[in-house]
Image 1 (cartoon, chains in turn blue, green):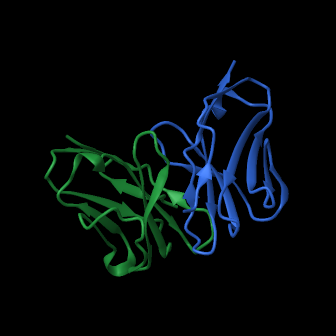
Image 2 (image 1 turned 120 degrees about the vertical axis):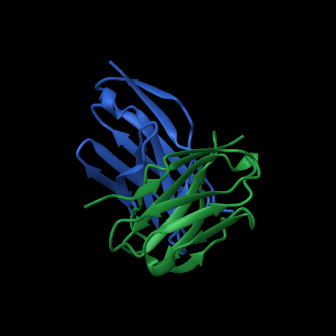
Length: 110
Length: 113
């Protein structure tokens, strides 16, 4: 069974710090990796997608993928209180059906 | 562009009753997915439509759940009869093609009492 593991948190960081969110997955055939952000009571919204090993940067967000270690992470630089949310890692393989982790709750305190 | 819309946003029903959830995907999105989040657990896949065809329904928990997508536009998910363990948030998502990020609706929070 394909699994995606995330630490549920909460991860608490001060405003302005770097938040590091981690995700591991079990299926070595996984090809696509996504990070979604979900505010309470709202829909998950895409933050980043990454498909090949290495880093991908978009503004304050950097996704890092290491397929050999089956590990994907999301770094948020200069964290803001508005970044406080649950971050969901999703992984898909040959079937293209994303499998989600439980999500990590991030709290950015002023 | 209108996003994915789901109705109702909340539903409270008694055990044994029937509930029908509706999802309107983004116009032009052939791929439509249903997911469910039970409290404290991860968002779990239920099924995937490509247009009006069920591509993968391996996540459907049992035959009390019936999903349809007549005409390849909106989709409905019927639970009949509802059980207590069916409580959770049901998300619908759509995408233009496979292996691309999904666009999610706000979900329907179902409470079975």
